[in-house]
Amino acid sequence: MKLKNHDHIAIIGGGPAGSLTACFLLEMAQKMNISLHVDIFEPRDFTATGPPGCNMCGGVVSELLMQKMAAEGISLPKSVLLDGIDSYVLHTDADAVFIRPARAEMRIASIFRGAGPLGAESQRPLPWTSFDQHFLEMAMNRGAQHIPRRVHRLARTADLKLQVFLRPERGETAGCETPSDPYDLLVGCVGLNGSGIKLFDDLAFGYRPPPSDRAWIVELYMGDEEVHRRLGNAMHIFLLNIPRLKFAAMIPKGHYATFIILGRDVDEELANQVFHAPQVRQLFPDGWHNPVRPCHCQPRISIGSPQRPFADRVVLVGDCAASRLYKDGIGAAYRMAKVCALTALTRGITAQDFKQGYWPACQSLERDNRLGHMLFAVDRLLRHFPPFGQALLMVIRDEQNRPQDPHRLGSAIWDTFTGSASYKNIFVRAAHPVVVVRLLRAVSKAIFTRIRTGRQVQKQGYPHVI
Ligand SMILES: Cc1cc2nc3c(=O)[nH]c(=O)nc-3n(C[C@H](O)[C@H](O)[C@H](O)COP(=O)(O)OP(=O)(O)OC[C@H]3O[C@@H](n4cnc5c(N)ncnc54)[C@H](O)[C@@H]3O)c2cc1C
Image 1 (cartoon, helix red, strand yellow):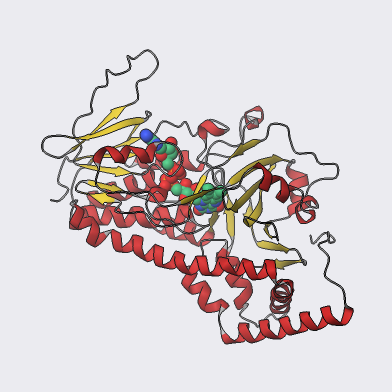
Image 2 (cartoon, rainbow, N blue to C red):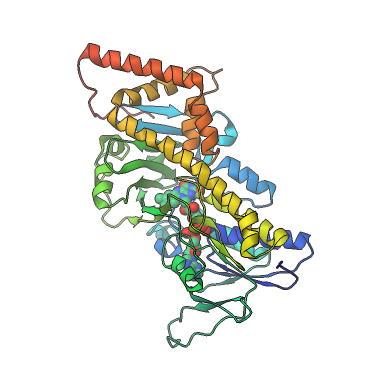
């Protein structure tokens, strides 16, 4: 069963996964002289500020991903890219260290998924444009049709094609849903937030979404000057000894700093602990008080793998299927959208076709994520064995002072928080014998210093690092 001329495809969700799947399907089909009709169902207005227009994300994209996409004609205009980030500051309980990328193409940029945080509408005309709107328009320019409605139910027709039912709008009678014309292929790109993933229960093909954790994002308005004075062109990563915290990050974005907290089901209590940590507070302007009603959300982030994200004529792509652990969700959506389109067009659209053509790519991401989980488990060492934290910073600092050094540990840490490399690649660098020997030496030195001075390293504020 293959896609053929004039087939109809429904894509549910117009985030990066949905728009990119549409782009790849339409472009590849055109090269094969196949004309497809692609509908994208997406109720969000990405030109709106605050939650109605936003798909809730840290908004960091790597230059490497931008270069890869540009090579395929998927380019990001300057108006989408806010700040170029050319360094990290890694904050631990012991101290902080600067990390610069080994190569220029490893830099990252920050973006707003929607039209910006709640309240930004007062700054219209806005000096930036929405990332998701740009991708959706790109799909429309390639021939996709945007249907600005929420899908409410799915069903199969007698000949096993797919029908979508739209949520009744104001003024329409509930219960009087009109089914769509049948679709030959249905692509689910509904992410992990909201009720979109429940739609697939209707089709009962054994799909289970990946397990996820609740994260925390808040947009802090500080003003352009203060953001640059406090954060510089650096993303600040916090690996702190706070129970349930994986890591937190502060990302400069024009007048705003986006603060994200990842951990085990982040709630207000954990967020407050992180906000009050001295390592975090010292980056805020003097006398800073948290805004009373900041633009804040608690999106879900994938931490595992899905079950059976495909069936005959149905496939799921993006966060609701396979993604990268704690980073590069947009890059993962890009890669999986491409594999999905290629499978549908060259192999076919049965469950067996997706199992053979698409599922191996999901599993490969999952295998890599397992290594990611191992790398992130190192944070337990940082937490329970403070000399390790000191040693880590010592080795990174030492590397940065050696211009000829390949900066294995620093670059591994850099890539852990960006999409520039797989976890396997990071693991190989971090476990390199030279790094291990340097770390062991630095740990012994840290233990010796602690014994000699006889005092515990205090959890303390430290001078500004910028
Ligand atoms: C705290 C946090 C920080 C992150 N930071 C980054 C980062 O810095 N860089 C990065 O690359 N990734 C990051 N990610 C991951 C990134 O946000 C996701 O990987 C990415 O958004 C996945 O795209 P998607 O299209 O699969 O899903 P989404 O972006 O969630 O889009 C899903 C779309 O489906 C639509 N939809 C849902 N239900 C329906 C329905 N019933 N009918 C019609 N439409 C529907 C929604 O409106 C939405 O637009 C982060 C995630 C979290 C939680």
